[in-house]
Length: 124
Image (cartoon, rainbow, N blue to C red; front, side, top):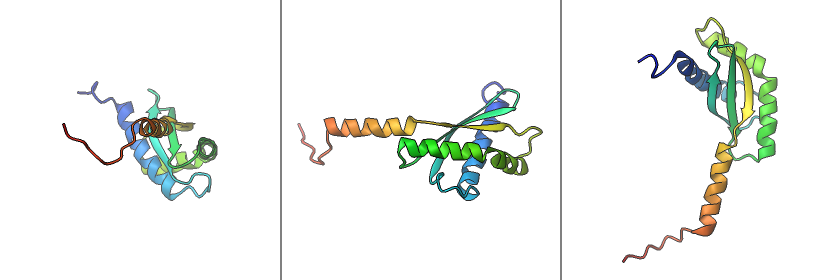
């Protein structure tokens, strides 16, 4: 059972939930907007956490500016995490842009261009 869901993954999931709340409620930088934490990867020694974020409804340049703002606020967010989580060592946060949502939206647009859904279904 322990190998099915290792502690580093459990900590990463908790960090993801807490960061999503902190970014929404505590970060006042206007560049952050509606950021979404899509994934968190914590190192085995809990020293570092890679946090992948994307901005919903934002252009790529705006999402990258959001990542810069979050990296600037990483110390503040780490301190807030330390207050909320019961960990001996709270990982240093490193934010990265995650293009997965943008790529998915792009693929949906391409599919809609090739096979538009006009709402009329023809039966056999």
